[in-house]
Length: 101
Ligand code: SF4
Image 1 (cartoon, rainbow, N blue to C red):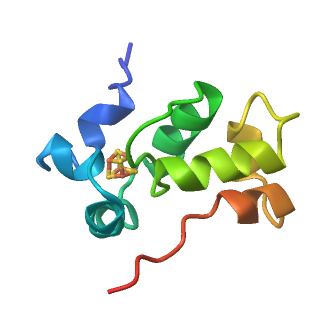
Image 2 (cartoon, rainbow, N blue to C red):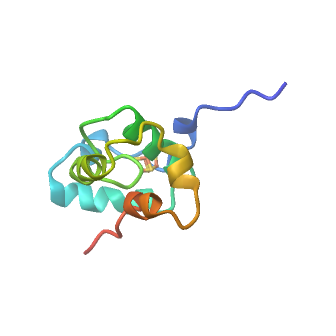
């Protein structure tokens, strides 16, 4: 039997200082850059949206971005199928923006 490792063990940010993910907005924008190539970004974002995590960068989205998305889509309680569904307006809304320099 193969035991699936918990997604956070594969997180690109596992060696990042946690304060960078929970810092001011300028620092969070830089932290989001780590998320762009993270192999578990969907798992991370799904957990944050499903659990209504209020603070920090998760799945490439800041807390402010997640709050805005949840306000626009209050009917969604399980985000994985939405995020994984191709060509979904909700998926596009959940797509993290590219951090600006
Ligand atoms: S998506 Fe970003 S915050 Fe989430 S595990 Fe990956 S690097 Fe960390």
